[in-house]
Length: 400
Image (cartoon, rainbow, N blue to C red; front, side):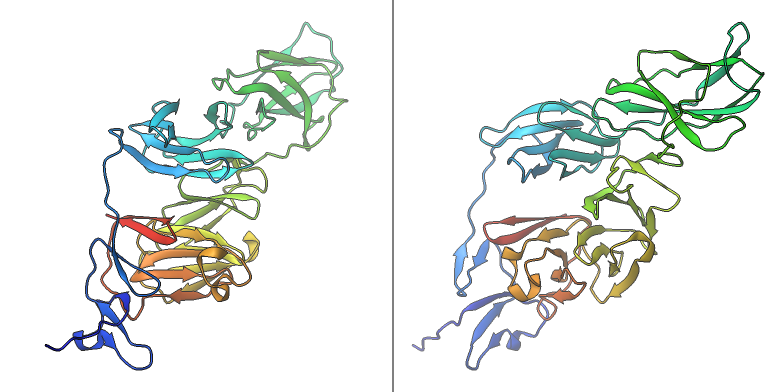
């Protein structure tokens, strides 16, 4: 009976004809049409994939492990929870806020979470909202019985909230008031429902308008303030025309800005002011819905409905959109690859690369080049959703 020596296995191939699956020559190897519950080793051997077993009755979703201290976070029902992977017990951080897709990153040594209801942060002790609501406009009343040092004319006032960490909200809308000579006016402050806010800052223009300047900072327990003079105005208001940071998916930090994607728009926060955004300028619009966005050294890889775009540049004002010849990516299947997970040629000096699933895995290098690893071997990979993770020296993508 003839014995056929099986050459090393090189993985799956559902693209070429049956006769082309076995390759001879000096380096013979063999592709298979399908592979179920097996792994291919680096030497071309086949081994059974390890089995799975149920470890908890809790239906955790979007589980993520922090690279900072190894803590695990997840969504459970509609709660944001911290999970102990040793016994799968959990601690509820905030109840009834985890709606829709949940994403996490590390920001300034804290865990930042984004979902449909808002941005939330956990510092190892407590969890709270990350953004601060824009306060309502204050009410101004001239005080006729109070002698002051204001010149006759019009004054404008705006306020902002400040939390215990020193983060300042966007400015409220301006309120104007015309007063008589040597008078004063009262600022009636709106009520604040955010328990994390500790102070309110007052901004006032000089006589007959002009630049909005800081007047003073009051504890949040104050309900009003009396203005008798505007001689001690200090710095100009920095948070005019800003709003709380937008929500979305593909949460990441790029060039000192927080980045999220929503529909076909990529939004960016103010530099180093991650909780605020200037919605007039801090965005890039794409022709199709964004399926993922991964920042690398030379720009941002952005998945579209039927192709992939590289947004090249280091500044929002001068970014160039380059269409790449990749197949339609699986939504949310992208992840960052460290230099130890790819060859030195692809890492280009130890830089991070992007990886996503299309017709096989595709790598987007740090310089904006695209490498389709399985272009000649795989086709017809379609899914509505994917999640990629590095596990045991392999990249595993779950699709649905």
